[in-house]
Length: 227
Image (tube, rainbow, N blue to C red; front, side, top):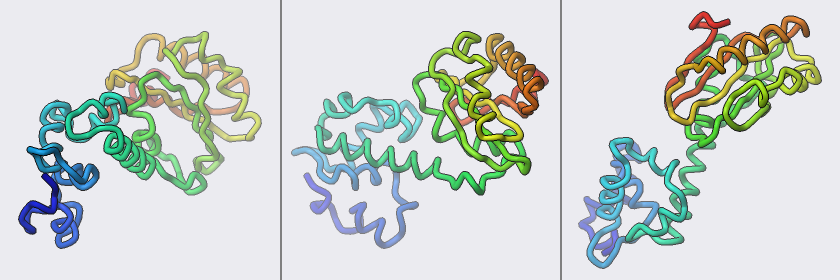
């Protein structure tokens, strides 16, 4: 069954055109992307079934986590629709994380969260980044230092400060994510942070904060009194 077989007032295409995308349900938005249903279901019904089975009350966020191969195996999806869904999710992710780095000014942990949250909240491994700032706390650049479980052997001060020294930045902010979604700092997180802060003092580069990113939430080690 196809969308055009539905009464006009029930069609997601017409509904979006007449009232705007914001009034559509998650299932209706998905139906527009996948376009056609199965012999027994409309595309809206296919989308509703998928959301019920896979979302676990997380809405559309499961689409970040489900693999392309898993999507392909879902009845009513297949190869082309799976690729379309993944492409749209990636576009949304890039739009959410887009910024003009020359205009971004960091004045609080919340600013850091807004800057990196959509980029980092769905990562499957721990990524340790350094955000470099000028004297006005505007972002000069961000660089990846390591990927993997955070520990002293993976995050060495020379790797943390090599780019900041090269770019002559005034200060840096450390950021890493917890794939579990819980941003609570581990003892290793705290020890690595203290080591980097001390190195920064020797080099004359202030380490302003260390932000741990979870799933939609964050923790500032400075606010927690760990640095």
